[in-house]
Amino acid sequence: MRTVAARVARTLLDGGVTHVFGVVGNGNFRIADALASGGARYVAARHEGGAVVMADAFHRVTGRVAVCTATYGPGFTNLATGLADAAKQASGVLVVTGDAPTSGPRRIDVDQAALARTLGARVVRITEPSEAGPSTAAALRLARAGSRPVVLLVPSDLLDLDAPVDGGAAAPAVPTPRPDSAAVAAPAEVAAVMELLASARRPLLLAGLGAWRSGAGPLIARLADRTGALLATTVMAGGLFTGNPWSLGVCGGFAAPRAAELIGSADVVAAFGASLGHWTLHGGRMLGPGAVLVQVDTAGRATSGRVDLCVTGDAAAVAGRLLDAARARGLVPGPWRAEAAADLHDLGWHDVPYEDAGRDGRIDPRTLTRALAGLLPADRTLVTDGGHFIAWPAMYWPVADPAALVFTGAAFQSIGLGFAGAVGAAVARSDRMVVVALGDGGALMGLPELETLVRVAESALVVVYDDAAYGAEVHMYGRAGAESETAVFASTDFAGVARSLGASAATVRDVGDLAAVRHWLARGGRGVMLLDCKVVRDVVAEMLAGDGTPMPGRAASGGS
Image 1 (tube, rainbow, N blue to C red):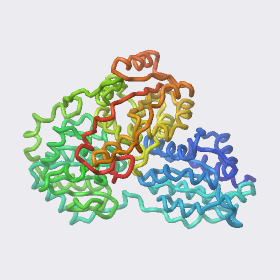
Image 2 (cartoon, one colour; image 1 turned 180 degrees about the vertical axis):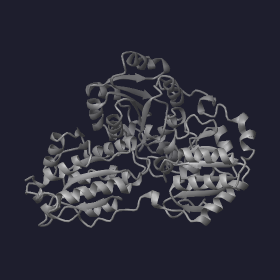
Image 3 (tube, one colour; image 1 turned 60 degrees about the horizontal axis):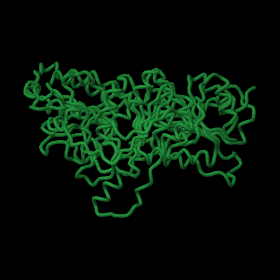
């Protein structure tokens, strides 16, 4: 007969779990050990907060559930920021953790179920040995079905007790959430959207992360062909329409001027699976004042006050019904594509001139990012932390598809998760180079997981945008008149730190220093290469220029 710990592990393995990220302690060691010895790949993180971000990134890249495991008490509270980000990102992550004994809490314990629910996760708790198998299986099903993290709590006094074979207890009464695909739009709502698209002169179809997850991309593209619409994505769905000649790229603060102008001239915008947050709508400035905005989403309510018509439904299902309706009425594409064709070339930031601001041994971040764009392989996974610097990779480094982007911290507006996200992405797709971009503040906050990245990554390029400051705060509050040095720091030798952990590294102060990247790539690009990029501090990203709203990565309203 297996113990409860062994039964939990065996149920997960039999359920198809292949990857586990964690930090072991008294409350979870036997479970983690059984998972690793049973065949799962176990990645030992340096901090529990990193472990849950790794599992989240693995899910974003593969679409599969990964397990994060931690001990009780401080091990669990260390999960908080990463777990909240995964919940707000609607990621399928299963956290397996020790918990207070069934007899009651000890001094080390906190109410982990309440904390998990507060952070947005669902909770399943084993209350007796016979529940080990059924409860674990239920938690795994919930993580796969519910688009939200699930926390499985295993009381510490049960771990070493014998667990009867499955069937000794009924499956717990865990409500299974209705899948997003089950949300059915009302016929009248679909008809109203069809009328808007049919009468539009300049329709735009905008796809968010929900559209990608539902598989709506091809349907939306065909609907655009039928209606003569142009296409755009949110930053989280970047790459969904790669190669489509009618795609304008990303909508929002990262949009290049010519693309933004076309988006702003649309008279009807139908958004599929997009939360339409501040950065997608660029503070309300992205769309023309007379544009009609339709939101198709499973949320059941408009998530922005700018929305004129909200349709509750799965993006793929609604797009398919709209396409059928357009065909049934013999809809002929409008004139916008023909009118806009001459403007659909060179839509990116690479063609937008600027005056290089590099000086005093510090490189302009635009010059740095543009130069690196020519060196990076097309088949890559881009991971970003949060902060002011995110504008540069978003502007100059396109991704092949949404699964090739892991934007950590965006949903919860946090920083410090980039290194951990890179670990999860590297494990998920070892066939792709991982390129991870961080600011100096976030890099230092999440530094322990750089060692994990060095230990596990087949090929990873780390780009630290080091302006020796919390750049977002410097720009926002300095512009507002703040003069203190609370967000400014001395320079950090990231290259030296990286070498001490076993990575290759170079300090970059001008484009010539990027020769180190060429040499690393010529040697096969194996292992981890860190670029300690000393960037000028006073180049303000277009997404922030003239906008007093907090930056992504600190305190803004995100968007998918």
